[in-house]
Image 1 (cartoon, rainbow, N blue to C red):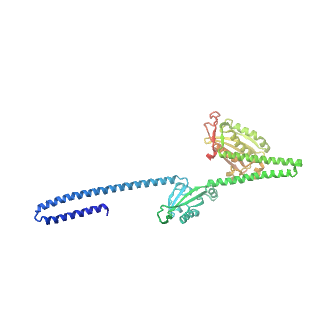
Image 2: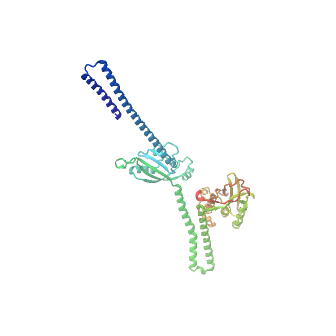
Image 3: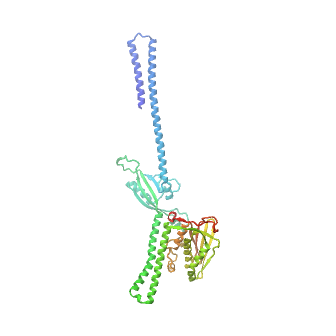
Amino acid sequence: MTAQTKKITLATIAAVTFFAAYETLKTVIFPRMGVVTSHVISTILVGVTTVFIARYVFRQQLSLLGEQEQTNRRLQNALVKSERDENLLRSIVASVAEGLVITDRESNVLIINDAARELLGAGRRPVIRLTDISREPQFHKVFATVVAQGERAEARIETRPIARAAPSAQGQAGSQNRRILRLHAAPLRLSDDRPGGVQIDGVVCAFTDVTKLEMLERVRQEFISNVSHELRTPLAAITAYAETLLDGGIDDAENSLRFLHTIQRNAERMKALVNDISELSAIESGAVMLAIERLPLRQVIGDVFNGLAPRAAKHGVALHNQVAEDFYVDADRRRLDQILINLVDNAVKFNQPGGAVTVLAVDSEAGQTIKVRDTGPGIPPEHLPRVFERFYRVDKARSREAGGTGLGLAIVKHLALAHGGEAYVASEVGAGSEFAIKLPRRGAGATSADQTQPATETVSYAAKY
């Protein structure tokens, strides 16, 4: 019973008591009062009392309605605030770049954002329990550990795509699409007013994709290992021959001269390697200024051929320039020379006696492509995806014998990317190889020499790639 109801009930009881007392007193004090007079007086008293009671009840009802309206308004405001807070929470969760999954104690999924769906391969399918997301044992172990111990937990898991391809293609696709995730899980406490305040209501888990970080770390380690390996051989040769000369070999005029030539050759090899490493580092760090200008490609290739003609003659390889006279490209002259020298030099070194190197260019809507073809032994298919990697060699013995540092094609790839283009290779064993550089169009009519004025732009490779 509410307070208002109690007041109305008491008022009614008071009115009935009042009328009973009135009738009693009237009978005792005025026993001879006429019936009409008695009814008139009673009616007047009843009317006045009823008016006061009705007025009181009406005021109480108005007060009750006012309080109810205020309660409804407060409830409506609370619902609006709750909805706003929920929308805010969902917006924050959805905007987080890392994957986020929140579960209760029974591993029922309360919240999962789009980033977590993408990282865990859940797609848009309904997710109710953790088993709907992943069946990786380590994944579930993290959640169970947090619920059981009430402490933060971390783990590293690898996600693998569902293989639907042929068995021969599954391994390659799996290695390319494999993701490495770092999990950071913490206990979820919705209320601290429980005894001890240690009740765990669920788990909040964040997922970070560290695939690229681990890949970069692996590349860094391989790079250091490769540099050490590449430097070890010439250093060992220089040290050995220098020690021989110091131990008395310098008195042998014929052999000492041969030793000095060997030392010089290995020193030049180390110098070339260091220069290539420095060049590649500068390109990748973004410290590259490209002076883009309209260049006559046939003339550029002719200059490159002139510089490499002695090497081509030494290997018995013919050089063919099949680029049209009116073919122009937009590129940095020095960097384009660097690209072409690396490609043509490789085509000469890894060719066959009596072979040929042909350079041609193709113009299309997608861009301008410069192709360098050779008649060498070709590259096996399993090596093609890695030929542009640092220090990667198809034939390691022949590459070192030819004097290569193993960084030339890596420099070519990164310079092409710095221009906004790309580098690719096609090859067939026994039929030769074709390395190509695709450069973007920077103006209409790439075959016209006077449509685009020279321009200089700063290219930050690190920011782009």
